[in-house]
Image: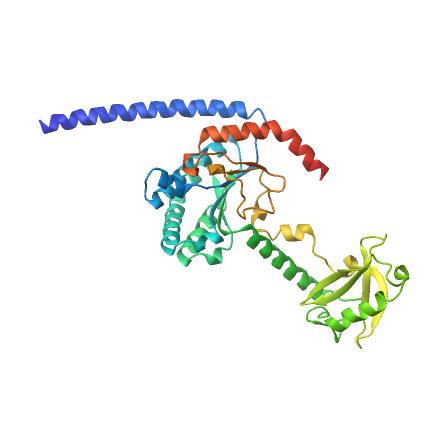
Length: 372
């Protein structure tokens, strides 16, 4: 009797599994047809997501707090599949902000454990990384992570480094302000090393800007020298002649103080070369020719996000319109969307709607970019 019941249950289970596979195949076919139609129009290269609403989702369904994040992970996996099937090469997700470390210690630890578990899952054969040939980057101040989590992040990046079909950027221990600070510091260090190696035509030593003194004259003395010589005369063009900017040096970096503005070549600034005795020889030249200066490209190449182009679309779930210190540098020309669903509820309908909106406004956005 028990055996026959078990056989019947097994038979019905097989039928149910077969029906589920059939509906799954039909759904996959219809999705591919839909993506084929969408592909007629422009497809974004890079999409970014702020995954907002996991905890509210758990409260809404009276679930444990951690279950909301687990549901959010499943939503992320589905969206990644849709994006890569649609031909979107780069996807960036805001997984954990530096500000999130201020949450309750048990909640932070729970999130760290969940991320460690999901990182390990990415390396399993037949995972989404393996299926779509995804290269994974973990973006942010990884030194703030625990040692096991940081080691696993480095392992995932190393193992997936040869994948090239798609890219997933996971922002952990990240804020845009921290990224910008990191980039500026890196640029300053790089340029300071270049300046130290620079040899002046007049024999200024390599360490001329390496300390708070400029050829035996303190920073304050140098600034007072400029104040006395540049500001006491009406014939400023004769004395300055270089865009009304005075220069000083502090902590190894050039500093500039604007005086009265007047027409001049913007690349020309007041420069003075110091002899070994500390005497200033007034002269006018191009600071950019004398010493390397920090340019926009120098800052951008030190950004955490330098490995990917700027996002075309940023989506924040749950209807919130705040960026929450996420990709502030990279989203100046990015289209922003805020669907009202919580993150675990987001899916194909919201993605298709966003793509259609992107295609509708694409020509206008391109024109604005060309005007800049």
